[in-house]
Amino acid sequence: MWAKERKGIRQPYFRLNASHYCAAALLLSLVLSSGAFFLPNSALGWLIVIDAILVLHGVYLKNKVSALLRIGLAQLAVTLPLYYLIHGENQLLEGVIVVLRVFLALLPGWWLSATQKPERIGEVLSWGLPAKWAFVIAASIGLLPYMLQETKEIYAMQCLRGANITPKALRNPKNWPELIYCVVLPVLIQLLKLSKQMAKAAKLRHFGSVAKPTHWPATREEE
Image (cartoon, rainbow, N blue to C red):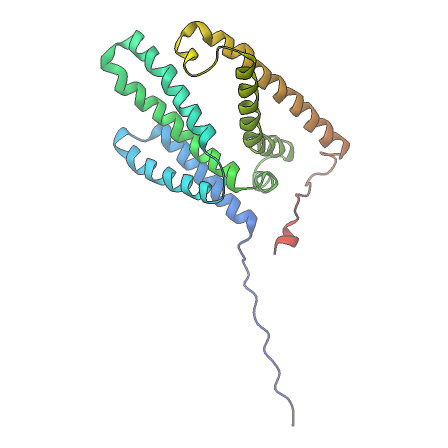
């Protein structure tokens, strides 16, 4: 008696992997960041709700949003006095909306860098961009959490040194140049130094010698 031939299980022609999820996250971030500038004021409420969900997702994955909140508060503290001096008291609400739009534009980028690996972002970007451009953009996004932490450490060390850059001291515009000298310039120097190191590391690994470079971890290992 002939044994019945077992029917093989058909594999789906299309399977979602980490690269596809990263592409969806990248597209969502671009749409939300663009919407922060182009949507009318009446639609900002829905955008705030969506961004709040992204923030909750990032916090659930144990990512800190405190540095981003400090940036938003700093923007608010700088923008509102300027609006008051230039446009008067009647335009303060417009200044708040401007700061809100900028903050909403930053949130999707924070969520993207907090939830997606830089190598995945580089792989997705290489689908439509040259490999070198994709590498630069992915490396820049990957540097955001590191630079935020570096800025926090430099700020703390300068405060311990006695610099007049505490939140109370920065209420006086005379202390703003000291913030630039003590924090902004060291951060820029550190960023240039790190960029040079990354460029040297890529050169030593012969980056750009092939048309389609690989991305770590390999897609085959994730499936």
